Image 1 (cartoon, chains in turn yellow, green):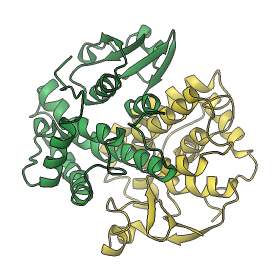
Image 2: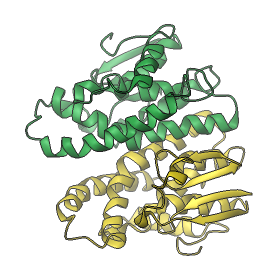
Image 3: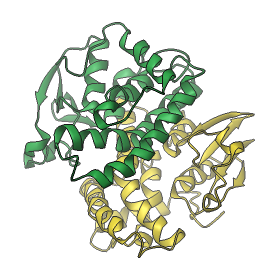
Image 4: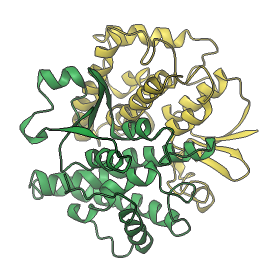
Length: 201
Length: 201
């Protein structure tokens, strides 16, 4: 059985929990507390030298790290990836957009505010990231004004990847009220079969 | 013929130029100056709403953005991707590592120093990124101590992705002398058939 090393408030971890659940793949959840340094122990660094969750152990001592690479692995030959070569590249494009332009600016303020509870200490950094985070949300909004999903007009791992931190962006101080296409898309994702909440496990 | 919208000093652009050359795929190079706002014009934003190069136009008005998604697209069904499902996921894992843990910390100081020529202005940010950049180099070094390439003991787009900004890391103030496994790997990549330099086009 797969083992998922995870920190439950993480949107990156939630992506993997959501897809595993929708694929009906059973997994053992190994909860680590990143705030207590549990991903920086010699034992964990031997599994993932980058010291990050989520980490999926697909067989004894066979690991995949990086949330979006795990989504890629799990979705191969399923309806959650795309079939056409160009659409497959579009899925990857949106997942790289998520990790480069979206997550560092939208997830990080949420982490500082809700996990570290140090909004004051990080006020300047939060302001810098606010502008870039809204820019990423604008890119999503523009696309979703004319599309129901990110790729191929169907639910794929591109949607899962972008849903994870968008649906909790308000916890990081982002106001989504003006992003009406994003708000409609969030409802669409939440209504997919076998959806689970980030707080469900 | 493919059109590549690019800014020549960009390592992200170089990744694509290198793979296109190694695959012997002819392409039209459209040079844009990001310092002059040429990726922020209405005309370019209509092609890529995220306003970034590299951007590959594979057919009239059919675009792929995100350098590593372009590598993924171009390498499908070639020797530059992996064949086995697990190794394919490893390639993606290293490419996501590159965009999240490596590029933002190693490429950005180089950009501030060599393109903006504002090392003094960004001194504090450069120091913050220095620590994270060395952490990423340490992850690479550890892997390369026991591997000739990143995945499957052969040259893939994972190597191309990580080579782009590692081989010019010293331009961003990183000292590579202690990273002997990385230095050996850089030589190995540079000796691949049809290799081109970042300054070659």
